[in-house]
Image (cartoon, rainbow, N blue to C red):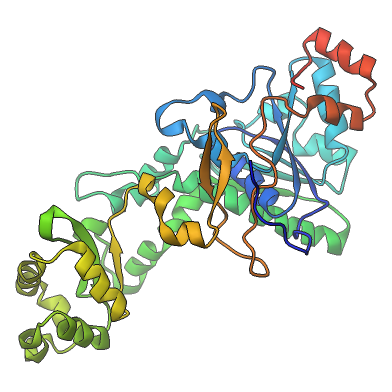
Length: 400
């Protein structure tokens, strides 16, 4: 399977070793970000493999999405020999990352307080439901914090709270964990000491809705859910057009309004004094929008897209996720890379949405098989072939 073209310059976190005890989305996202940016990320899995590998439905894509560029070692952390191997591995690490329930790592002796005594330079990233406080022992999921953090209220129609259409808090929580790890690495350069980084779903969700909180603070008026909000812009909507197709169209300034009207033959609306400014048009939406919808209903989405692109107006087709595999821009710009799925077949996966020196950080290692690198990593840690065989016989390790 081909990988992305290699850059002449080393990736920024080359030489940094990360050992992660993670599953699902939040913790693996943190490791994926660091791995994509060059870190050596070693995923510690249970003997039977990460359960995320076997999820169905909406979870079927979790593992191949968030575990590229990683190595895998399979250890039984319920056995002393498995813990000893984990500790020897951690002794070589710059960063340890975990996203288990509060108290789980402490029971294993793998919490920050325990590991700091062994290595004061260690950076330890914990991904939790809540930062320390009254809620910290609660069990959290992305959907839980969306409901209690105002995001579901803002996404759904009034009276119908609705979770966002992706794992926004899990993914962003992992990203903030990675940002915290990057900051801690810099701090270690200055102080010589490591530190503990904590990232949490609830606080991430509150950060996402901060703009709505501050709208209330600034205006004294509560933000309405997005489907019923009064938009700041008059033309900022999904239009149903010829053949029942839909397209999002926008005109967010007076200049764009003039271009919009001229391009679509709406000179009467452009000349209407009631529609002179954007704020005038916002106030006139009740009677203006039905006229616009009627005027555009006979045109195809492709025709409107061509007009809007030619006139540099904002527009967007209404795209389903699976249709993005064929997106021209993503494919021609190198935004998708070959990836191995759980069943061994090949697909494409979106890369980090950034470039460094004009290059997208790519896929250097395919998502690992369960414990794929166990033997090689153990030998690197000083275990002999006989030691590895003994560990395998004891059921303390698995994989290749």
